[in-house]
Image 1 (cartoon, rainbow, N blue to C red):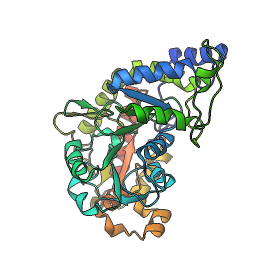
Image 2: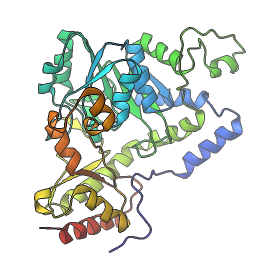
Image 3: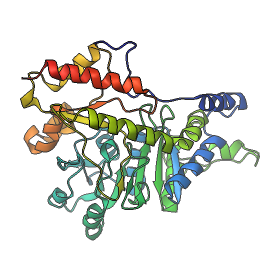
Image 4: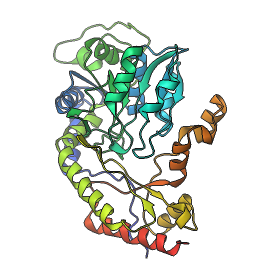
Amino acid sequence: MKREPYLVFGSPRIEEDEIAEVVDSLRSGWISTGPKVARFEEMFRDYIGCRFARATSSCTAGLHLAMVVAGVEPGDEVITTPLTFAATANAILHAGGKPVFVDIDPHTFNIDPKKIPEKITAQTRAIVPVHLAGRPCPMNPILEIAEPHNLLVIEDAAHAIEAQYHGRKIGTIGDLTVFSFYVTKNLTTGEGGMITTNRADWSEAIERFALHGLSRGAWKRFSDDGFKHYEVVVPGFKYNMMDIQAALGIHQLGKIEAYHKRREEIWRRYDEAFTSAPLDLSPLPEENTVHARHLYVVRLRLDELKINRDGVVEQLHRRGIGTGIHYRALHLHSYYRETFGLRPEDFPHATDYSERAFSLPLSAKLTDRDVEDVIAILTEVLEENRR
C-alpha cells in the first residue's frame, strides 16, 4: 500500500483567522516586535498562570537567555538528559557551562531523578529537566534534590505547553521554563519561543538581553507614547519575536485545548490499533498529571523483526508516511561523544531508546483517513518484516 499524497510529519494546522491576523500585521506597519507580541505574552502568561512571560525568536534563544539571566558561567555544570534535541545542551555551552548528562527512566523517557544526586558536584549550578514528548518530568523529586544544593531548575518545556504536574501547570514550577512554537509544535508561530518565570528581575533581564541589551524596545521607543532615547545597558542578543509570529500565536493559543483533545483521540486510536504489534507503545501518563501529547513515540521490538528502526522509517517514507526520530541521544553524536569522552554504555537506557524509537504523525491537522493510513501502512511494514 502507498499513501497519496505524502503525509508530512508535523504539518501544522493553520486556519483563516491566523492568516488574516498575519495580513493585518503586514498592513499595519508593525511587522517586527510590537503590540501583538505584547498581547501574545499577556495571553500566554494568563494561560500558564505565571507572573511573567517573555516571547523570543525561538526556544533555542529562550534556553540561552534562561542560562544567561540565571547566571550560568564558564566553569559551571548543568545537569540534564542526553535524550533531547541539541538545543538543550548547546544553550548550556553557549553560556559557558558544561552539560552533565543523566540517563533516562526507561518507562517514561524522561531524566531519572534517582540518578541525579551522583552527578552533583561543587560546580553544579542548575538542573534542566526536559518534558520529552509532552510527558511532565517528576518535578517534586527534582525540586527536592535541587533545594538543599541551592540549584536552579530550568525546565525545557518545548514539548509541554498543555502539560500539568500534580495540579500545577508546567511553566509555574521551576525557576525558569522555556517553550517552543516551532512549526511542528502543539502551538506554532513558525519559529518562536516563550520564557516564563515568577521573578520580576529575570523577566526584565530577559527583555533587555533579547533586544541587544537596550533599555527600551522598538515598540516602547516608537509607540504613541513618543520617541525616547535608549541606552545599551548589557551586551545583548537579537532574540526578539516579531508581530508576524505573534499574530499566529494569538489564534493558535485560543485553539490549543481543542487541538489537544484531537491529539488525545488520535493517541487512543493508535493505542487500540497497535496492541498486538511488535512495538512498545508510549507509556500512560503518570496519575495526577496532564500529558501534552506532543509526540506519539513507539519503540520497535527488534528481536521480533528482521529490520532495524531506520529500515522501518525508510519503508514508511517510501509508502507515503512521514515520521520523526525524537531523538538520537546526544552522547551518541560526534561532538558530545568526542568533546566529553562519552560512550553508548554510559547511558544504556537512552542508547536503547535511540536505536528503537520513532514518532508517528500526531497533529490536530490529521483527518481520520490520515490516521487510518498510518495504522494500515505501519502494520503492513511490520508484518512483512516479522521474524
